[in-house]
Length: 175
Image (cartoon, rainbow, N blue to C red; front, side, top):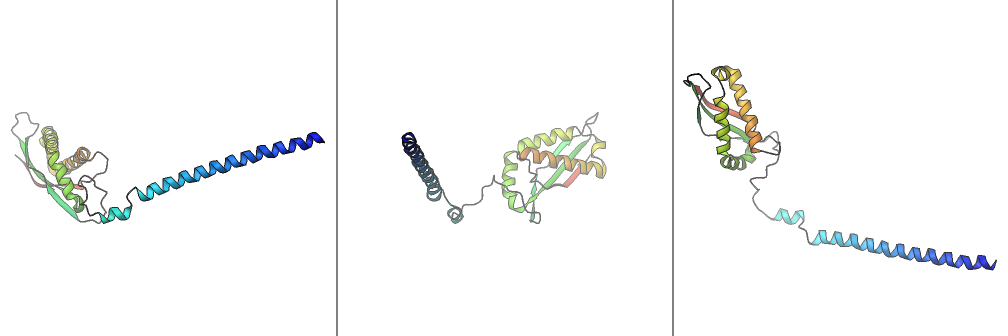
């Protein structure tokens, strides 16, 4: 029985030491969380502080427009290109506008100016591959509009969001 009495205090000592370690580590954990929260509250800017900052919206940041948003049009430079003809006697004169959301008009205009050489080069190369039959009639006209729409969105917006809503011809002559 004397042996049993000596074993009980050692078990109480080890469990008491373990409990104090858990309490210390719990306090350290809570202090760490409190420090992280206080840094986030006092050091990082809050939404209310950012709302008070009246900077104009960034032209390169364009969100997805609302479906009922007002539309705007951006004119693209006129392009004159020979068609893919045996004698190069046929050419097409193409003048169009790009339909975009009004809230994104300024940003897209800047982007079009920056990449106008690339867009015009693609358009010329694309139209040079077309034959008279490819651009004839309503089907050819609409196919060409869709191709320009798709490629301009691909070249201008690498995030996959199509911000150009439509391509509308203002003048389209084949001679």
